[in-house]
Structures are given as structure tokens and as C-alpha cells.
Image (tube, rainbow, N blue to C red; front, top):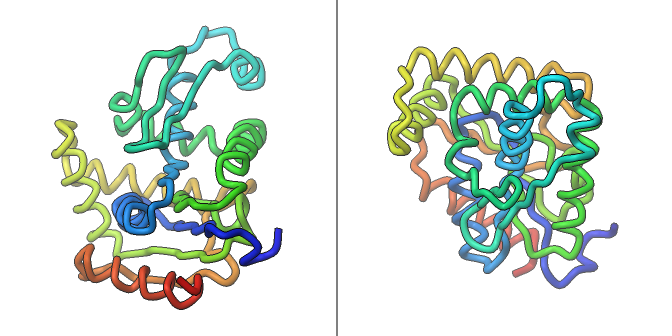
Length: 224
């Protein structure tokens, strides 16, 4: 896949929890008129389904029988056997299970194939942890967002509170650091700064300020 052969770009945004990926990807996709692809929601959807599977079912058998659907036309929506589970997948325990399952080769292959199919024609802003390194290594524009762990934990804590999830800041930070460790040390598609990615430290910068940085790069690199 050669760069700039599509009329509409493939843009990836990677980074750890709480760095602002979701909010910024959503803002950028809306501004560009692109689809916003939340790969984290896809892994959480798999994790939620796995958590509620038959006890005797292994991962491979589970994937063979999985009936899950993702809708990215507006906000990210996830459906398990036609029942919407978009809110349920945001629970902290589901996020931790998603991090664990993401280390399974069969799970990554299942979702990487799905993500490539969704984004192959461009016109997407895809965010996650391996979108620019594994899913679309030849993406037109790649970003890596990061921030101080304390800052990221506070953001994630506020996000949970806004959704009515009652989790203490200390617990949020502990779970976040554990997920960072899992994602960075896994042997399959670890969290890394993708080759050629623009690194942006969002610590202490408001969302609008970071958005302006990203949009500036898109206009320059994407020739918009």
C-alpha cells in the first residue's frame, strides 16, 4: 500500500491509556469528515463477550462462534448477538481483560484483519495501541500521544466518573499502570512508538491545544 494513492487518508493515533487518543481522534475525524475507529472498543467488545462465554470454551472456539458487530457511523457502538453492549465494555475489569486477551495471537489476528478491512479505502482516523505499527504500518499519517502517568490517571478517573463508574483514583492509576506494562511487554504487537510517527506529549496541554498540533501536521503531511 503506497502513501497518497488514496483520495482519503489513513490516519493512526497510538499511545497508552489516558493520553487523549479517543477524544482527539473523534475531534479530528469530525473535522475531516472521516470515520472514527476506536480499536480499543473492539478489544473490549471481545473481552466482554469472552467474560460471558461458556466456561468450557477456549479462545479459538470462542472466536469461531463469536457474533459481534461494530458500528462506527457515529459514536462507536458494539453489538453482541444484536444486543448493544457499548456501555458495558467500558467497565475497568473489562479493560484489564481486554489487555490480557490482546496478548493472544488468535485474538489479534481476528481484530487486525477486521480493522484492515474497515480502513482499507482510507477516510479514517484509527486509534489504539498498534494501529500505526501493525495494523497500518504504511498509514499516511501516524501519531503517538503520551502524557505523565499522574495526568493520564486523572483524566481516566474523570472519564469514569462522567460515565457513572465509581472507581477511586488510586485504583484507576494502578489498573492503568498494569495495562501499560501488559501492553508494552507483550510479545505480540507491543505498544511502541511506530516508525515515522509524530510524538506528542499532551501533559499539561488542553485538548484544543493538542488538536491544533495534530491538525497542523495533517494539513502539512496530508496536503489538505
